[in-house]
Length: 290
Image (cartoon, rainbow, N blue to C red; front, side):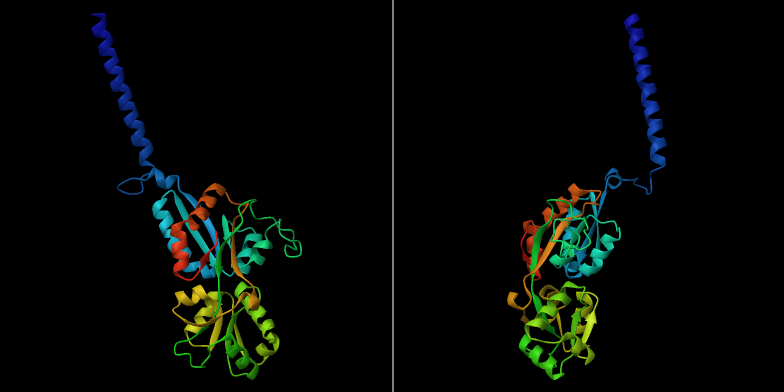
């Protein structure tokens, strides 16, 4: 009899607890539901990574970002593409950022306390130790509009035309890596940039995409851009600069020490150096280095 009574009480208690749990579940769930299917626990736990990257990486990183998020739904990637100089300034001024990929060493050095003080003149310290590496190499290309109306076929043609005042060239501003590479090419050919600008032989862009657009629209006779941007814009490249002319075009990457998610940031950088990343980068003319 006692055994029967115990079983009855145990069953009653189990039913009571089940009813209580169901009530709590309904109560907590009703405040979170945003659709007929309810909210996803995965979405609640999603990590947002903010990636600052050179404008010349817009197409490749957008594609790789989509691939990565499809494989890692727990991560949301937000990209900020602009000139490396602009991005460096934004980071310095306190912008939220997890990863920085620059189109030149100078802009990364200016944020790296381990860099030469002659470059990091302000003593800035934003690069997370042991996360910096060289990820890609690019080429500085001389691109022309459709049908090449000015008949430019080499950097030698460019130098001759600029000296004669018969060519209009688009180039990046002096705070943009592609502009700095162009200035080195000017030095190689003993060209005076200020004199050429005063003579109306040069137009400028605040980043490589603006220079590329001027060439695509035929607003100029040619432009100095990256090989990868020429590929993306389907422009004709008539010449690429040698290392002797402007140095090696290397893209450094690093996690910033202000990142709230340093491990996830390093995981994404590792993905960029994987076979999948290499395939996308190589497809537009980058040479992977990571």
